[in-house]
Structure formats: C-alpha cells, structure tokens
Length: 401
Image 1 (cartoon, rainbow, N blue to C red):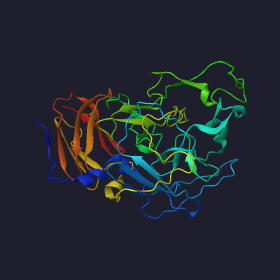
Image 2: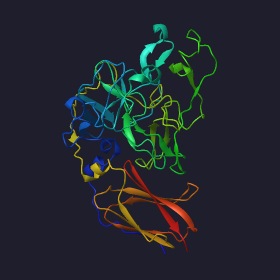
Image 3: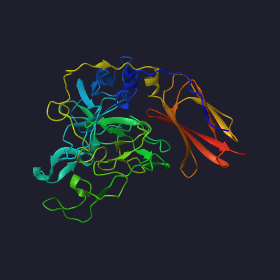
Image 4: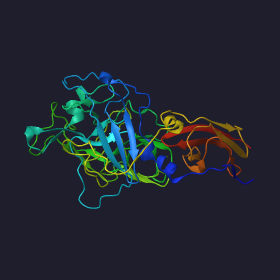
C-alpha cells in the first residue's frame, strides 16, 4: 500500500505566505484590550511588516501578574516601544557586536530582554562585571522579571511565566527574537541539529572557573562566590550544546529547513544558567535603532502591512493541536484528521522509542484526511509528533501486526 495524502485544492497568495512566517506570527498580540499592571495594555499592540522588516509595537507590560520587587524602588511604566526586527537575518562575519546594557531583544509578549549584567562592576573598574541574577535576583518577581530605573520591565533570565518551562517532552516554542533577527526558543530542543533525536534540555557551553582568586578582583568567598561575576565563566567549545552566542544552527518546528536560533538555558531544577538567553555577542548583524540610549522607538519610513491575527494565530497561544487519529493500535496505516481552524502547513513525524524519525510528512493541513503507510514499521510503540508554528502535540501510536 502506498501512502496517500489528500490535501485538496488550496491557493496560497504571496501575501498570505508572508503572514505565516514565524517572525510575524510568533507574537502575543493583545486583541481584547486586556490591561495588566497599573491598568496598562498588555503584550504586543500591533505587528506591521514589509518584505524586509517586522515592526513590533508594545507597552513592555506582560499579561501575567508581575511584582512585587524586593529592595527595588522602580515601577513599570508604558514604554511605548516600536522594535524593528529584520526578516532577513545574516551571520556577522566581521567584528562581533557585543550585547549591550538595556534591551538586547524582545520576548514574544513584547517585554524586553536584557543581557546578564546589572550594569555595575567591582570597584567600578569595569573588569569584574556583576551578574544581575546574583546581585539583583532578590528583586526578581515570581516570573523572574523586574523594572529598571526608567520603568522598563524586563527579564535577564528565563521568562518562566511566558511559556511552559517544565515541558521537557516537546520542542520549546519561539519565545522571542534577538535584535539580529534570529529567534529565541525556550529551553528544550531536538538532540540533533538536523531535527532528529529525543527532546533534551539545551546546555550552555560556558563553564565555571575554579580557584579562589580573581586577578584585580575580590577573592572567592561567601560574599563573592563563583558566579557572582560574568568573568567567573569561560566558554569551552563543545562543553554543551550551544556556541559562544548561546545558540546553534538547527532544524526547529518553525524552521524545517533550519535556522540559527538562541536558546534559554536552565538546569534540571529550572534554575537559570549563564548566559541565560544570548551570549556576550550576537551571532548576526544588528540593525540600528533598537540598542543604545533612548532606543526602541523606531520610526516606520516604508510601506508596511498590519498583521491581523486570525483563528490560526490565536490558536498559536494554545498548548495543543486538536486532531483525530485511527485506528490505534494499528497494523498497516493510520488516518489523521486535524480540526478545522488549526495551523496550515503543519509537519507530522513518527518517532520510535530510540528517538529516531522513521516517517515524516510536511504540508499537513487542517480539515483534510491524511493517510500514512506504516507497513514498513515493526511492532512497537511510536510517537506521532504534530507541529504547527510553535506548538507541538505528541500522541502515542501502537503498531501491532
């Protein structure tokens, strides 16, 4: 029996295709005028795009509860940002751009991403830079964020309230974009960069130094333990899954052909691990306008289209894709029907208990029947992984002949 894929007729215009690319559709857009802290509108207010750029308008206030902030006198305010994200990111092959103080990227809910530093150094010498998690962690709220002196609410580390950071069975969703245009994922990804293998927690390749002294810095003691300063770690190529920028080039559910991507790093207890989000430097080329003093208020000077979230985009905020599959157990074939209104152009993978992809099919569409030929599979347990945008749903399939 040969595999049959009933797709039906579907005409896709260039404009609609543009609307379904992740840098446009991955944002949490406030479509209901929801308010949060201090009555400020939450999440992203508007997404506009051209062929080259995406413009994200945001208040910098999330839809989850924030505060209180111990020993922090600052309060969040509406920052009225317009961030500019390139749709055509490229690797920087020249002098790498350091991730500066202030925002270095933006989470998918429009909240700012900061680098690991708190902006101060030991004896103000600029040599031993203080780690924000160590020195300011007491002021983080339950979502691991806090406001800066200008009222900019932000996260230096894993935004635990933005996505399910306990879900170690599925590839994490896109939870933001760096200002070089590359996506930022949560903590979990495929073991192999080609999109195969079991899901695993991504490991940083920065290793804590040893010893009890710091050159021109404080001794290692209870007041300044290892990890208190950024320079307490060194990058060791191959020590983890990620490079010096805290990312890698890999296949993801949203980029089946591969992309460079950053990953949030946490340990098995969900505690943040340096460099937390983006490393000391960006992988790609950073556009002007997003970084530096008074940045983040870009003026749109080109013709743009406003992205209107559809039922498909709203579904992106759910945790499951609804679909039916039968028979199960099965001997030779499996029928799959995705509920109408779900994502278009989904990807289905059958994965064995070793984490190997044994069958896959792209262009799965909602509302149509897809029949998969399983005759070549041996008896056993398999996992059907259906992926659409940043949402994965996994079901267990039993093959018994």
